[in-house]
Image 1 (cartoon, rainbow, N blue to C red):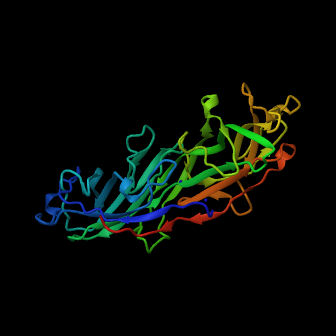
Image 2: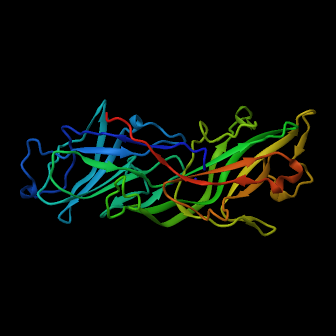
Image 3: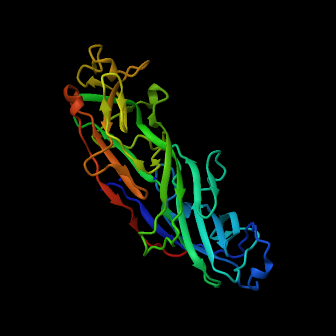
Length: 352
């Protein structure tokens, strides 16, 4: 849950866990190596975890760990939490004599009603309305050692943003709502069965069983004071409004209209356009067809496809920016947008 304006960074942070603690489901004490300085420690390289706006590495507050050894669970639903500059969990777990596979993710989605984390690295029926940036990490076949387990987190979702502006000074464009239409809000995620190290970008998780297709609001003006007046500077109106930008990776369908309804994946912008000199409303008018009107509101509906020749799906770990410019009301059907795809940049920060 992509373009040149996106500035997201992969920060490296050292999460040295001293006095780590976790709830173990293993009762095989013979499988544990002698304690003392043999507790399991973690370090992590983490991507941003946020709502609509990326955060620094210091904003990561916790992550969840599952671990398996010798084909059996060893750590289940263990929450590792930041305490100042250190990280802790309870009770402390020690290295077994057999290799350990670690699966980690953030934030803790086990508390959501639909998501179910079970088995060897699966998250079933994950439901996301766009405000959760899910990241994950896998480390396979780790052996007993004093050094921390270095968890390199990756984005599981696609980052989707709509930037909207108006460059025609003759018009005033006021936006009341923006939404993504006919998008999957639920899916099942499978962790890769290989380590997600920084030097193995090909080791990625996968999505399946996308469902719960619906409309997802990005921006909603609750009152006249919240209605957005567009300027020449492109703006992401979802920020500090609904804060929606993280979507389930999925195939996209072409936007079509069959004289009764729109179908396909689309961006809908509900707006009014006024003459700047006189203040008179020039769009929508009573002459506009019903399909361009938004029921029980003063707004007209503009529909934009999210597919291009290059973009047929939203891919995990990529950010997509859709640039919409609302200018000429006599050619609203022809307003264009540009989409490019770019991967996140990776930046190493000093260890904490």
